Length: 91
Image: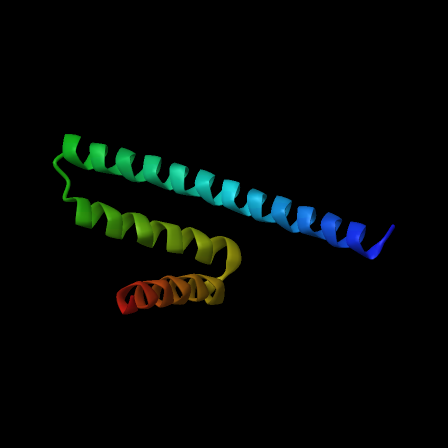
């Protein structure tokens, strides 16, 4: 296999890898949007403030992570979320 063939093959591998990552991110975004819409609908139907529901939902997720992965990992997740929010605010 020539150097050019190797480079072309590597380019295709990178492209496939990027495609898979993009496709997975699109799926994650879609699932997240559906979950949010479900929560919003349920909050409305049950006269529950959306802010309170979201706070409780996030706390519940953190508690599950803590139970499964441990306290430190739950703290790491929350720190990553905080960093993402800080980055979004900076832009």
